Image (cartoon, rainbow, N blue to C red):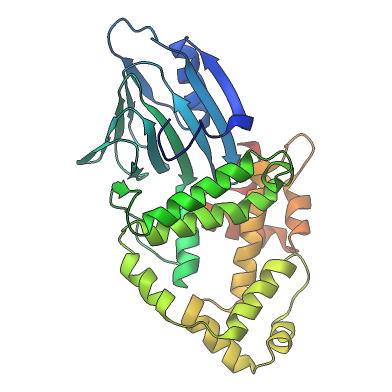
Length: 329
């Protein structure tokens, strides 16, 4: 194991150990996405393949060892993938770019291009999957506007330099928390949304991307206290019946001041932010719900929605699928 981690991560989330490459292929495809694998040499594993996996609300973390020299090909990932080799070496191809990485280095692959990865026989990796709509919706919230172009990161990540060290510390902390028997990440899955946001925030601010300059400019601007106060209030009370008048009273500023503050720093009104927060909650709750015992109506009503027809239209506009499709996924 590399100096990044003293032992293989996600010990409490052991999933599989085998020398059957087809079994490993099936497990990884089920967790990440369909893909092709090409094994060098005899096709047999020279050591055990190992899979550890912990889910996040919109993605997950995986410790993976193939146990042989292998190539993985995907026509299009459909999500953001952060690869951290913990031993051995790997070459990742994404679109027209390629990166050779070893322990201390990492790779960010985007969702919109062809992807391939070649592993040496002694390679082990920590893989972090983040769904593209979750990361890009979070980015739009940070930027204070709804419309953004496709997010694109520089591929190569030096975990020993600059802000990437902060990203690595965030990852270590989340992994340590996941391996604690009393972790809220394990006992209260909705709490994982906060951990995921911390991870997304670290990735967006530490790794150069096509929004880095805009994010840095936003960080340098002081957000008014009443905007932060109402943001926090919405996060805590989104399921309740809330009016603009109540938010104005809680902020202790004029309605015009509150609206102008939100327009400047979020490009949406407080009531629009409330609606987006409710939609995000429903999306997460539907993904985690059991369709045999839960239904869209109950989850939407619990989040504060009352006009279910309008809710369904707005949900599909934000997430690209109907609420019932999310529940059945």
